Length: 314
Image (tube, rainbow, N blue to C red; front, side):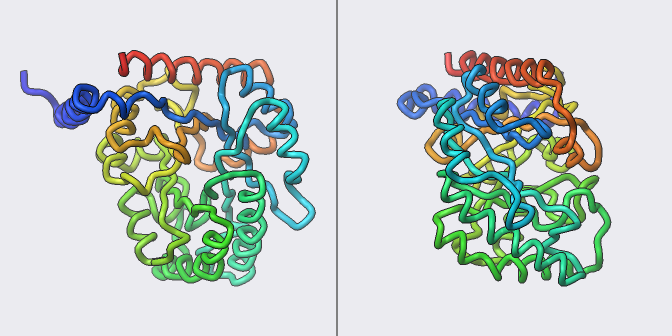
């Protein structure tokens, strides 16, 4: 029976991976860097979150970008101490962009809030050793476009702070998000178009998200290949936005595609971010955490990911 189209695409990636194993086994000695995005842990302390990740054998954390005002958010010295206590390093910071701080807003006050937010988060990211700040060109939870020039407004607003990324040696990682949650930049190709429009050395990288890619990309593995060197972080959740291994996600093809693009290097991360499937995931930030449930979710995800990776590498 003739294979389905997605199976043919999967096979191309598997063939490239197997060729890499045969011809360049030295490129597979280093494993993928597994991190975790902690904003979905709700209102629990950073110390509790760090202890959970340490127990699961995770060595990196993507910190919640919670500097919503000058007096809010993690403090540098305290954060570094907590991470050091638990053997963790910051991979980067998950920038949080809503209607309140929208780079594309038709209201100047909201664009200014986005500028102010980035001006707080970039120095913080650098100070805690993070290599990237996730940037959403629009607003999560606003799937309806303001107008036909919001793309241009977003580009112009981000350019106001683009130099900061270079000054602090922090990568701006543009995240495409599914159309149910944002009004534009939904795919890897969209992110590349946005980066080209910004045309600035501080804005050259991409934060992929497998959950969103399932809705928007023709094939996740091919999208990873297309992202190539621009991809610095990849958010992960299973098909139902739950822990890895509890849905129908083809994790093997994703892992193989990552190795094919040489993703197993310093400064590039696989970052689980399982949440609920709603159109606005931000309420997860404010909930009281169920520690037992979170412990199980993290352990399940970390264990399953490493099991599948080990099985592929042989």
